[in-house]
Image (cartoon, rainbow, N blue to C red; front, side, top):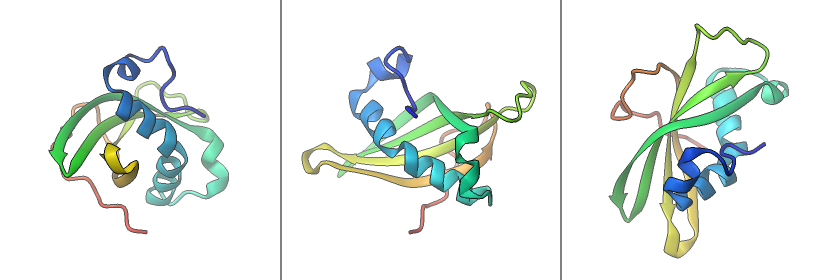
Length: 120
């Protein structure tokens, strides 16, 4: 499963973000299922579509990404769920980490809202 395909508008905007999302898809899914208290057997039911992002320059780049959750089993268009994720990328060390994920977000929620840290 690919988070962003070549035709998605965000893939042309930031290559590092596109690469990070593609690499982190399994981790995003795992963290989402854990945060929602769902069994891993439900993993085939969800896909994530990035709809916006912002960045913060640190000793690398923090990407704050809003993603629309597509639940293949429940296709109610009136109940859209979003997640916010934080990804840390340090290109010169080839570091790509999912560092935060918050669930039960809505379309109008700001990416400036705190994002829950991922604890391993």
